[in-house]
Image: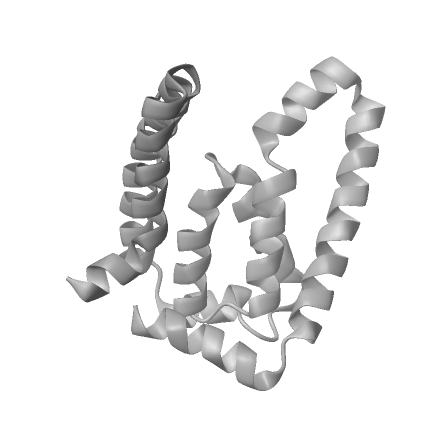
Length: 177
């Protein structure tokens, strides 16, 4: 029970805050509960398909294949695959992290995982088509080019900012799950 309370202390605190708001400021409390309900429904509609895809990725893609195409030394090929995976993905950013965990577990390089997360957050294909239709093709290409450059720079800085021990710890956490 103690572990449960420690693990979910923030969630439990938020429940108490929502209940307190409901009694102290009913209008804000009801709005807060309504927003919480909408977010929960959205998460429950996104997370199950993501976990099904993760299970398939875990079973169907061999570790050696993942290392070959996105592991250390995969070079430009690994970067392009990470970009394509992130850009073709659907769903909110929080769905990218379990996928990134499986990529690490299968032997992808940390750099390519950072590229994947960056691409998921900024270069999604549906977003690009919407942007091109509403803001123009030139704007979309310019923003995409700067986004790609930014993603690569941020991924490189993030990887360089982690020492060998921290990188090893990240891999170990994903191997144990």
